[in-house]
Image 1 (cartoon, rainbow, N blue to C red):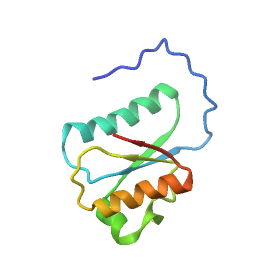
Image 2 (cartoon, rainbow, N blue to C red):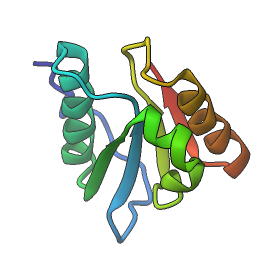
Image 3 (cartoon, helix red, strand yellow):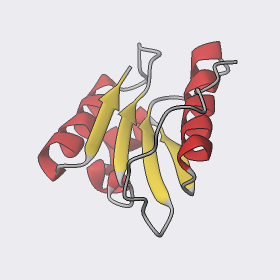
Image 4 (spheres, rainbow, N blue to C red):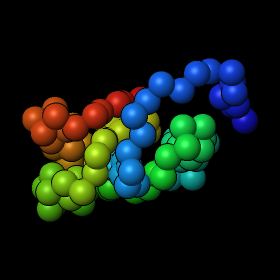
Amino acid sequence: MFQVPSSLPLRYNLPMSPVRIGVIGDFRPYAYHHATNDALSLTAERLGVDLEYEWVPTDALAASGAALLEPFDGIWASPGSPYRSMEGALEGIRFARESGRAFVAT
């Protein structure tokens, strides 16, 4: 498992409430999906922040729209295409771009 070096300085203004991350993708028991969860957990631990994350299925985004992503502070487009709904994945990415949410894709 990857370890973040403890010698890295922390120079962040840490939030008082939990940071919420929406992971756009269709969770499957692939190693890289588990690695996404591990990366989020390890980052939160290293930074000393409360972090909550939730996988948001692409077909749910296609059916219900990007409003499903409103509760999240940041958006992560997961690895693992083909998605069940490319339309839903693109809807989520569009939402992140247009709402100014922090966004990363792997």
